[in-house]
Length: 165
Image (cartoon, rainbow, N blue to C red; front, side):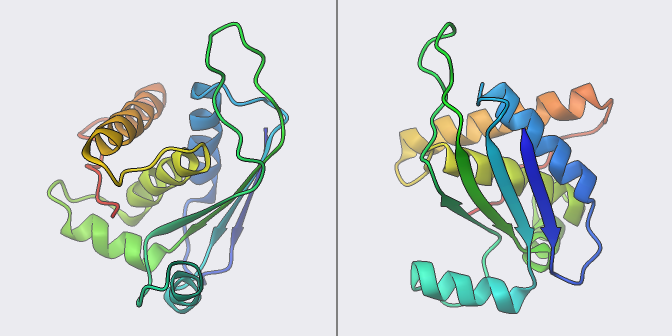
């Protein structure tokens, strides 16, 4: 898996954890190991510009996903996954820090960025949360991936509850 993490935000973030959880999520979703992903960490001003440009919504948001080859997980266990460019995930640590602090189960900015990374990966793979059944599927999968990754790393305590919009 080729995953680039580029921190342009000026905020210190755990880039290795973002890389690791993205790799774990893609492996768990059975995405071809030669696929490519880019994760960009930006400040609130840059995220607001993207949010306005692509969603026509004011203010910065937590995560945005920009798919390229529209890769999907294989439909059966024995299907060979296609390889390609997944696309870009853009994260905003300022929004992540605020969301982590205000969440029901308070958590750190880095924990929120890990959750948002998985959320972004799932969006790149075609998952959405507009409808209640889609939201249940996506957030359930998101929680399972984050919990599995945390368990593999021996991290204790509750996983961050979904705070993404």
